[in-house]
Length: 165
Image (cartoon, rainbow, N blue to C red; front, top):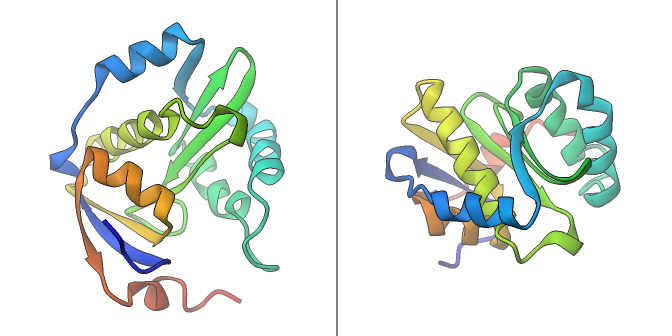
């Protein structure tokens, strides 16, 4: 599906397609998906800053991820003791998913899909039936559409992020 860059989407969480085989295949390759723990916040923030530089001079994925990390709403993918990916929810605002990122050298293993499934399950455990994917990019859309149904909200990014400096 092609949508305008930086659009928002409403994700129908109840349409989530779980994929236990994906998680098993990742484990066989040495990857593990787990909830981020507060003692690792600095390590996770360093990973995000190194692999996903700021999109603007005033904001970054690390800034966006910090509230999610503090609220225990972040999942990471590790290989051994190395962080290779992360996804958050409840970061920018309540009910939002993202950011989502996998380091370039580990892409192609569907780590993003496993992180997304984990976040969607977490949000359903929190009681949500819908989630918002804010300021979407093509890579995230491909992951979202593989595992859930969603609806594009035309022009929503101007509302969701209009107060950023």
